[in-house]
Every structure is written in C-alpha cells, then in structure tokens.
Length: 195
Image (cartoon, rainbow, N blue to C red; front, side, top):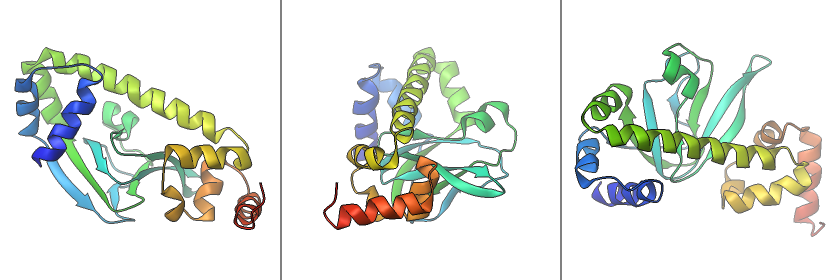
C-alpha cells in the first residue's frame, strides 16, 4: 500500500505540494482495492459516496442512452473517478462505473473527505485543483471523441495504451458515437494494412 500512496503523493504534488501530515491523515481513510475486469464499482441507480484514485488499469464510465448503458469515458492510472453529480447532490443517478481491465485503486469515502478538510484546509485547495484536472482530462478525451473514428482511434490509443485489447466494437461505437459498421470498417482496414 505504501508504494501506491507514494505514487499518489508524487502525482498530487505535481498539482500542489502539501504536507506529509496530510498524506498520513488521508492514508488512514484510504482503502486499497482490486477489482476484476467487468466488475461494477458504482451501480446504475445508486448514490455515489466514494472517490477513487486509479493506481493500475482502466475504468469506464457508462451513461444511459435509449434504456441501455453506453461507455462514455475511459479513465486511466492517476485519474480520479466518481459520479460527480451524484457525489455532490447525494442523489441516485443512472451512471455506472465499471472496471474495463483488472484494476487497483484507492477508495476515499466522502465522509472522510469532509473530516480531512476540517483538519487540513490545504486539502480543500488540492481537491479543487484535482477537480480542475479531472475536467481538463475529460475535455481532452472529448476532443478526441469528437473526431471521426478513423482519426480519433489512433489518438485514443496513444492516450490509453493497450485499451484496444479490452474494448469491443460496441464500446468504440459508443465512445465515438458512430455506427458499428464504421468501427468494423476502420478496424478491418487497419488490420489489412490500410490507412
């Protein structure tokens, strides 16, 4: 666990260096968890009560569309993942968060966050900057996902190395909001050496 706390500290220190005491305090509330590919971290129809820091693997955020859940975002190591609207509103949401690969992550309960902020005001400042980073990363992903699949697919692979081994054509169509036929055509042309 110490290795991953050190990894998280180095990552967050690149955003805003904070005291060792803060990390010692946070570590009391962190729970290091492993999940297998396909396991649900936050079910659709539930209230979000945790934030998660991804140490290893990829996590998908699924949104409802036409009465089905569709993959909308892929999050990577050093990303913080949670259903932000449900977390803040404390209301149920239809968003689902699921492991796309085997994953290792820290869970941090909302009530612990409130407790840490009351003792370490600098944590609130770090939290604001983490939320800005979350938004910046989602904006970058959205910029890729707005591209045509043919151009966006290589860019997505560059920002998410190895993800192609875990996503099916249906997932790619959901992400890029294109047809399965388009995905199949582009992927088959890439296999055949086409551009």
